[in-house]
Amino acid sequence: MPRIPRLVAYGLAAAVIAVFPLVAPNPFFVHVGQTFAYTAIAVIGLNILLGLSGQMSLGHGGFYAVGAYVSAILTTTYGWPLTLSMGVALAACLLAGLLVGAVALRTRGLYLAMATLAFGFIVEIVAQRWVSVTGGTMGLMGVPQIDFGNFRMGPTYFFWVAAGILLMVQIASDYVFGSSIGRRLNAVKESESFAATVGLNVPLWRIGVFAASAALAGLAGVLFAHQSGFVSSDAFNIRLTISLLIATVIGGLGRSAGPLLGTAILIGIAEAIAAVHDIGLMLYGGILLVVLLVFPEGAIGLFGRPRSKASSAPEAAPAFQPAISGRGDAGGRLDVESVTKSYAGVVALRDATVSVEPGTIHALIGPNGAGKSTFINVVAGLYAPTSGRIRIGGVDVTDLPAHRRARLGLVRTFQNLQLIQSVSVLENVMLGMRRRQGLVADALAFLLGAGHEARERAEAASILGFLGIGHLADMKPRDLSYGHRKLVELARAIAQKPAILLLDEPVAGVNPQEAREVARIVAKLRDAGISVLLVEHNMEFVMGLADRVTVLDFGNRIACGTPAEVQKDPNVIRAYLGAVEDAA
Ligand SMILES: Nc1ncnc2c1ncn2[C@@H]1O[C@H](COP(=O)(O)OP(=O)(O)OP(=O)(O)O)[C@@H](O)[C@H]1O
Image (tube, rainbow, N blue to C red):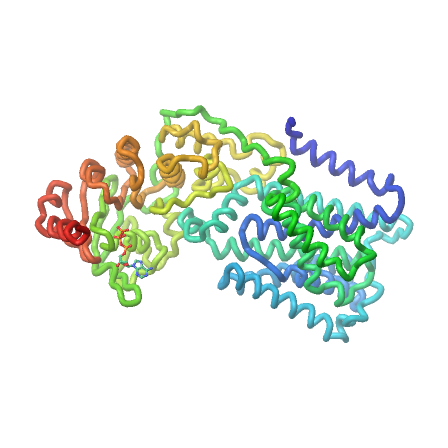
């Protein structure tokens, strides 16, 4: 099926919104359209939160309620104008989202779900018990409707407002899903430590997406209040949150168009079972189970997956030159001074000192358990050292978090590969890049379909070409061989424009021919001026490539020198022979 250009699709949607209430057979359809519009707004927020960032909320009914009550109280009790009350209600939801999001930072998975559930219950109980303000179960009457004073056209106006807002929110959601924002949220979902090492401030991203999602739920609540003209605590119980979640999952979690379908199905079912309201939740549950079993990707999955954009650069781009220290002004020197790292009862690193000179390859070797991975994690900022200092280009980074070190040009790969499975190889590489345009220019390019992320795509494709895997750009990482996946991770690291590259076992598990290819690439990176700190067990690879080698054993530095010096060192021979004898 040919793709409809994005702007045309949005134009068509706007035309449908304009015409629908004028040609709808009766007011009931307009009412259903209104309910669809504001419910979908809340579902879009949940889809971004859950589908992209992987954070579960059972408290979104609470944010919806905050939005509804704040706007309803300000207009009915205090007589505020609608636009002002709606703005303040949204700000209140954003604030509530920031607060709950900050608490949620300390929890994950089930505990996060429980914490947000508690928030939802607190809001519900306050709404019930604080009768003097909220009206409790009796509710607040006379909440003004969005009708611009024209009662005959009122429902039509309301539909236009709600559906117009929905269209804007959907466009924003499409942009989030189709841009670096979505990729970054995916990275946060798949591995927070990985996200930090590509330079993301993970707590900020988690709180930010939580607050945005809460604000969308609040916006839906505001619209609900001004549609129904009546707000009572009965409307905001756990059923509301569950319905929103069900719509998110039924529609297709993590796909931008999923909420529209999910909300349509939810409202269709709600209308169909209105007569059997008491067993409604049970029916939703049954439908949810069927969807999960039969269509695990949700209803949107029936329409297939969107094709990823073909890479716009030539397959092999021999002209590629790694940009050195493009964002890090720190230079390529790394000094690790007297670093000790103790875990409970185990000293993994003891007073380790290593200096990597700019533009050299420095290997760190040692038998299993010598402390090499600990060293890399301490340098990258994932573990705090017990004592000692770490400097990049003379700048003390010991107290800087991983994402700040990454922004200084300290880039790493992982022994256990960290690639995002849900996006293409090319997009994995783009994850390591900074956006080239400002947000507004980028969003405009996305809307107009004119060269959105073209430079990033071309650069990522050229890095893949440099590594000889340009032909894999549009594949998913899970479909690649292990050796190719390792190269993709290396490509992602190169895309971050490293000043210092930490390679954690780059040839573990790859065949000898691939290992030679990796050696050739790493040597080229060094020649281009990048400093490399290499942890590797493959001695042929290390000795043929490294300029200097440091040997660790039981967390102690036992030797440091050129490969030839280290190979002759009696301490090193003893450590390795000991390891071999232990293994025998
Ligand atoms: N999170 C942790 N908690 C407790 N002890 C740990 C932890 N991580 C590592 N260790 C211990 O610290 C020591 C050094 O481990 P580390 O993984 O750094 O060694 P390594 O040289 O990378 O080993 P390998 O070559 O097998 O990957 C080992 O004794 C290990 O058991």
